[in-house]
Structure formats: C-alpha cells, structure tokens
Length: 307
Image (cartoon, rainbow, N blue to C red):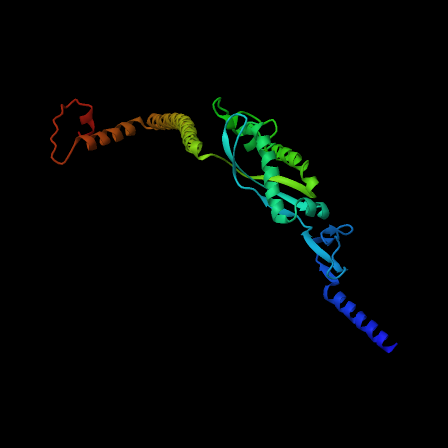
C-alpha cells in the first residue's frame, strides 16, 4: 500500500512538473493565438490576453498579431486609360481578423505581405488601367479655379469624375472582396506617390518650365501695363495740381497787383504833387550814376525838380 502511494505521488509530481514546465503560456496584449493538437486546431482562436492553460508537450501555441499592420508595396509602372505610363507607390493598413483561417490559408505574416502584394497590386493595376491620368493625380474635391486648362494637357482637362480619393476607395473595395477568405481585413489603401516614368519626365519638366516662363512673361506684361497706367495717372494728377497752383498764384498776384494799384491811386489822388516828386526821385536814382553826365533841356519835365 505504501509503495502504491509513493508511486502515485511520484506520478503526481511528474504530471505537476510537466504542467509547470509546459502547461501554461502567456498571451500578450495585441496578440491572438491558435492552439493545435499535432497540427489540428483545437477550439476557437484565443484573443484575450493573460495567463492560459494548455496540455503540455501536446498542444502547440501559434501566435499572431491582433493590431493593425502596415503593407508597403513596391513602385509599379502602370499605364492609364489615356496611355500615360506612371509610377504608383501605394501603402495599406490591414489586420488579422480570423486567426484560424489565416493560419490555414496563409501560415505567417511574411507570407501575408507577399499575398497582399498580389491582391492590392492587381486591384490597383486594374483600376488605374480603366481611368485617365487626371483621375489619379487630382483629389476628389479639386477645383480648377486657379488653373487654365490647355487642350494638349491631360493633367488639366478639367474637374475629375472620381478623383484620387475615390480611386483609392475603389481599389480598397476590389481588394477587400478577396482578403476575407484569408482571414484578413483590409482597412484602407493610400497612394504615397504618383510620378511619370523617366522617359517622359524630362519632357514634362521642360513643358512646365516653358509654361512658367509664359506665365512670368504675362505677369511682367501686366505689371508694365499697370506701371504705365499708374505713372499716367500720377503725371495727370501732377499736371492738375500744378495747373491749379499756377491759376491760384496768378489770381492771388492779380488781386495783390490790383490792391497795390488801388493803394497807389488812392495815395496819388491825395498828394499828387508829392507822388510825382517821389517818382521823379526814384527815376533820378535809376538814371544817374557815380560817373553819369546828364544833359536836359530847360523845359524838361524831369528837370523841373532839379531847378
């Protein structure tokens, strides 16, 4: 009996050791796990964090991320509907919503990145092929208020029908129809960069330079016209001011001369003899100098005050 109890106690210790050694696992926040029994799944995926119990050495814990993950695609050369080749560099956010299906269909997250390459790039290429360039480079709320469209400019052909935002939503909708079968939820798809291919980029730059030079020449011409108009207005205003000032000066001078004449006339009328004498003295001062000899007749009016 004693040996039996000892044996049972030994078995209990062994089992307890196995449980302590491999019977527990910790699931961290932001993770989910699938328990398998020799490769076969056991129950539903575990999504709540904490200390968990499993059968030691029999159950295998496969962990997956529960948080949002980032997918970055490689830039691809894609032709648009109007036969313009562009580079599209896109990114997306995704997460694992069904860990069991994800493990069975994909296996691991690195494989999922390659899978999303095929799904998103395929949907992106298909949508871009069906739309003109203006739909890719213009936002959905773009307004041509400050742009002047030219007939040969495909990027300025007016307001887009969909716009870049709607195009990215169309890519998301097309790709989201495929990803659920792999236990993946695609949250959004965004375009990081859209650019012309190298063969046409230089021509685009040259055309942009010519266009900017044309706009600069037009602005300079408008500036010169405004300058001439402003200088004309200034010259006109200056002439008006000068003319008004001269007219007022003439009027003032005329009034002053009239007032002086009136005063002279009034003074002359009061003392005509003295006035005549004073004017004669002024004439003597102007006529006679230090070395001046003057010959006058005896009946000269100028001589009357020298007698």
